[in-house]
Image 1: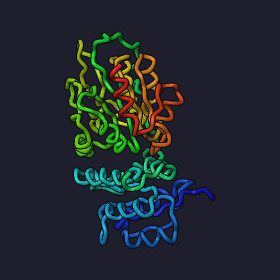
Image 2: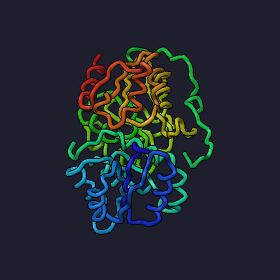
Image 3: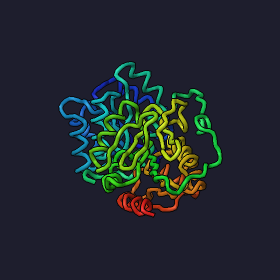
Image 4: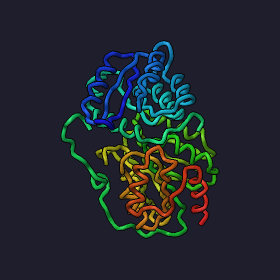
Length: 357
């Protein structure tokens, strides 16, 4: 196939190189054109083979993955999918890699690596496909063939008519994101003052990454970011981020809004799911909500964002040009869920304007 994605694997583990090669060769549109045991070897192979996408390990001899990525994105920007570990240290380094310009990451546990990679083969392949088409930023700027039951948001929160709300209730900003979203969210909140209405966030990340991600967000803004806790009251000036292994729902308790965590099944193959959070906002916040959909792969949250709009919310979607992947925002736009299509660097300004009305 002439249009196959040409992939170079960079990893010092022979087992990982072998497993990834088998996974990618099982697809009909990805060709592994080579592998390298470290960045020094990779540098020469990139020049000679001209790959479309790299997979890059973080911990390697002679030069670590972050140093290599930093040089790559400065001198020859190209799509990179990181191979990360599900540890606190791995989370912090992976988030730094995304900050440097990596498109996405594949998280591998410290034990039983081969079985774990095979289990997420479909997801790994999908991430490379997305990376090949993604908008690359320069520096400075399904389990294998197993039939898995697919759940809609109904599995966690059934549809219902939106409740009527008092106009005096505080506004809430509900924000969903996925691929490219860690940096996009930071870019948005950097421009928001302490007086901004509360923001609730569902970002697709593993549980092991939650604390590091919340700290990254907190360091970028005048607002206060934290991992949402069950029963926590939602207050202006704060950002509540769904933990990486639970859905975040927003419920109403009189004039107050409360975080509710839910351990239901993955929705749209995600937990937390933007779909679930947005539906709860449609049902319990209604016209007091401002919806924001940032860059992300797939369609998670698009239908429920339309439910939010039907319930009276005003919605913003990130535009295609500034998105790493115009999947989730693009699907929301196609469904008629958006009121404003805005470049990333103007979203904070749009939120401030809508919050003042």
